[in-house]
Image (cartoon, rainbow, N blue to C red; front, side):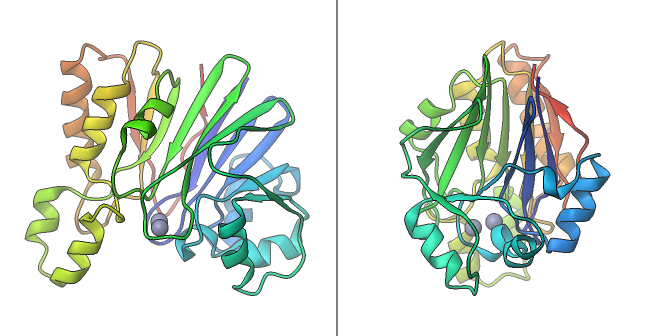
Length: 260
Ligand SMILES: [Zn+2]
Ligand SMILES: [Zn+2]
C-alpha cells in the first residue's frame, strides 16, 4: 500500500509525506519544525516514525525547518553532495547524511528512489520518482523548464505532484512584482507555469495516471480555480476524465492520497 500527503506547499514552505507500506519518507522540510511535527500528527503519524528525508534543493522554502527538526528527531537525510554541502552551511551540525547522485537510483527499504536533474536556480536541484511494488509517484517542484529527459522520467506514473506556480496572464498583469522578479520566475531556472504543466501532462497522461496534485501556487499570480479549470480541460480533452486533480495548500496539510 502506498499513499502520500502534502504537509504544505507554496513560497511559505514545502514538505510532503510518502508512505510505502511500513516505510515513511518526507520530501523537503520547508515549514518550521513545529509546523512539520504538527501537520505530520494531523495525518495520524508521529515525526519519529519517519525513515528518511529527501531534499530536492537548498532553498529556504524547502529546508527551513530541517535544522531544528533534526535536533528533535534522528532521521537520515538524503541529498546530492552539492545540496548537502550548502544545506549544512546553514548551520546544521551532525545528523546522518546519505548522499546520492542525480540519475542513480537507490533503495530505502523496499522503495526505489529515482532522481533526475531539473532546471532551477539552485546548486543541484532534483525531482524524484518513488516506486514501491508496481506503483510510481513522481514529484517535481521548482523547475524552470521541463526537458525531454524529465518528461521521459515521469512517464508511467500512477500519481504526480507537480508545481503549478503561476498563470502567464496573472503574472503579466501583476503590478506588485518588479520586472526583474517576473523574469526570474518565468526564466528557464525559475518556476513552472500552468501552461508548462499542461504541456507536461499532455506528454505523460495515460489511463493509469490516477491523480495529479498541484503545488507551489503563487498566491498573487495563480489560483486553484484558474489552474484546476485549465488542467481539467486539458485532461478531459485527452480523454482522461477520470484522472483526479487537487491543489495542495500552504496553510494546511492535504488529505492522504492513495496511490492505486
Ligand atoms: Zn526553489
Ligand atoms: Zn520553492
